Image 1 (cartoon, rainbow, N blue to C red):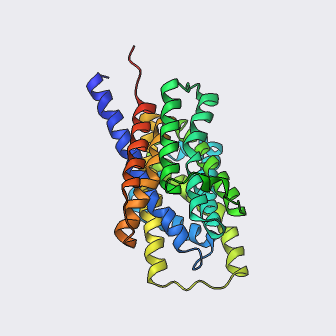
Image 2 (image 1 turned 180 degrees about the vertical axis):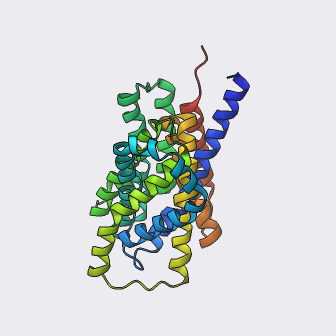
Length: 302
């Protein structure tokens, strides 16, 4: 593989990671916006149901032709589906019911840190000085953004059960990202994703039935339906395709660093759809975040 071709693959990997992060920033807003309208497991179930229905016409042939490979990797697919599909987003929706926006943002940024630590133990990826400096800059930028420059706010945070759910969700998605790196080469992305989507949906089914019997009936108005289609098509199908490609091209640690830009895009989405103000403080935060990502992901020349 030529250096030029390798650079193109790396650049594409960053674009895929960035695209997934932009899409997921909308997922966090929907999770917070719908917490009074739809229970968490129900939202997760319909999210993946939409993803399976939309993806099935495009990927069923891969599922058939790679059936033997899928059977040979059943344990891997079951574990990956459980962590990445069934548990991760369901925990986000649970956390959005009881935690505040600032707590959710603070805990969300632990995800790339978990990836870097786990990647060190499982894949031997070194935590270099540059990567450490990059993490520090990114964390400072994110904290500046969500505390409005008043870091004393952090000292006064009180933690709710939703904070625990979010922390577990961050750790679970870090594990999922590492599992992607171990995807058997004989499995295409189409077959891998469709099989894990279906398995994850099956895992959710009994819990959805239980929740449906123990909570008030959901009124599926236009707001809920459009939100479900967004999280089902974009935050599930498209974002997961992007993230899988990003991890395959960059590795879990470097792809995870791009996730730190999530608060930046969440801010822009809030500006566009909620008419929230973008301040000079936001640009300082963005500068720190982007600088940290560049430093942490810069290749050392030998």
